[in-house]
Length: 177
Image 1 (cartoon, rainbow, N blue to C red):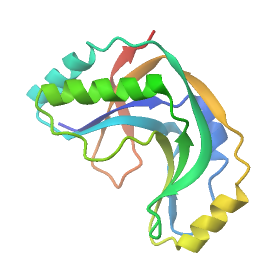
Image 2: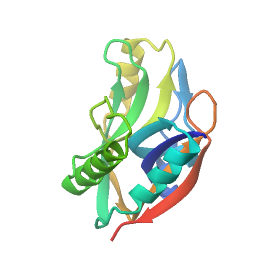
Image 3: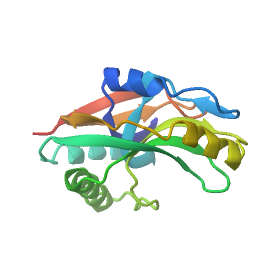
Image 4: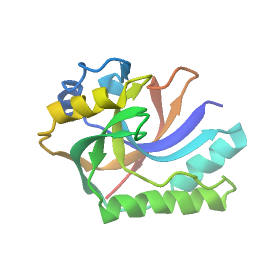
């Protein structure tokens, strides 16, 4: 079974807008715009039986649609940056959706997600990019006009063995609203 995760799709107009931020940073491997997403819960490599359980369990979630606002550019990794991201504003409805997925998936036997949920869209993965170069890149783009979209569904994505950044495929979609 492929590696699975849940997330929010980024509308194509917004993805194209974000893709204009590409370039100007050595060591960056820029994500293709069609692969932008906001990860809710990483699931990982699981067998077919667990994948069926995951698909059915996610179908139990009933939440309202909500607005997601991307409000700033940032990086992950501190002194050894590993990614450039568009950070999403904290939102109670987004946090509730992620927390419910975490609860339900743990209930069917998946291990807890070890990382704290930080809603974001990864724009680039970094390899040996100096922290000073990342800081310079972020400073040059310091005026980041916030962008938003309406989350009307979440999806179960799969990814094939590759070096990160896609391609991702929607395996199932779950409406919000």
